[in-house]
Image 1 (cartoon, rainbow, N blue to C red):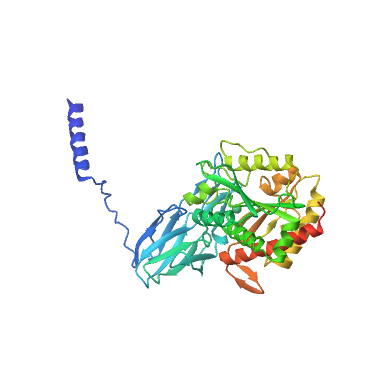
Image 2: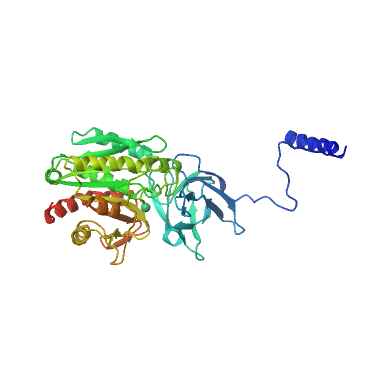
Length: 418
Ligand SMILES: [Zn+2]
């Protein structure tokens, strides 16, 4: 009797809740206030960062970035920032980014100190940079102004799948290029490798960009490099007579599309585990690249040099001291490469020190397993020194870097034997 009565009461309560279609009120809780000038934050598009937001008591907007998690690991990463603010023209909004407590290589570490600039744009095409401040350790804030009804916000000037598609279309129009689909991402997107130049050229260089989705710098670099090599002038002909260039422009397309920070769609870090064959089920992006590399080696076309392009807050060349029988040769060559980067580009950050190991990265893995002079090249997202001036980098700065890389490769292969 008692149970039946309880069931009736519960059924009535459920019906009432459903008919009102309302969640249960929380006694004593007030809803968050509206933030003056802010109508909406749009993060519902390709490459936008998954997030939610709420007002802080001081009127700023707390932007909660969602962590990107690594599979079977405690590692997690936030730091990709891309969304669009809808609001009142003239409004000034202070954004504070929350959830910057990353876990990197198994250690808890805040990404806040390495975030020193934020890029904004009124139209999504022309970008400018505003400073990020750190009112306390682990906190990252920036004040932005809406000059119109929309403001695009990004960690650094974005480069997404539409930009890549346009670039590949441009490359396809040249008789000097060949684009090969070497496999597919976890979610079925094509993985393209571009060959630029004569495959029978005496020297070969390979570059890969965008293993980590938040880091678009490498895409801008490749765009600058390719356009320089396709210019058709005497220098371009000279470069291509010595060197053929191959590159995989966007390794982690799924992560870029989903606006994630670091891992692929199954939680694998595509710049880890290169010390062993890639798992084709969990990291098909790496397995496809490895099959391509093995084919190149079998055809007598092993790359002489491989660059793995990344962004971080330091911008160094990551020269590993791995136990390779080729280590001495490798260090000598990387010293030449660093010297040429300093000579021909705006690179000033230098290489990592004598105790540095880069375990699991493409740089170290290709050196240890294939004897290739491979190295991770980070590009500083915050500040670079161009002609003695400190500036916050935008896409065009990285494109200029890529242009200059053509000269670096020419001289590098002039100074190093095959
Ligand atoms: Zn990276």
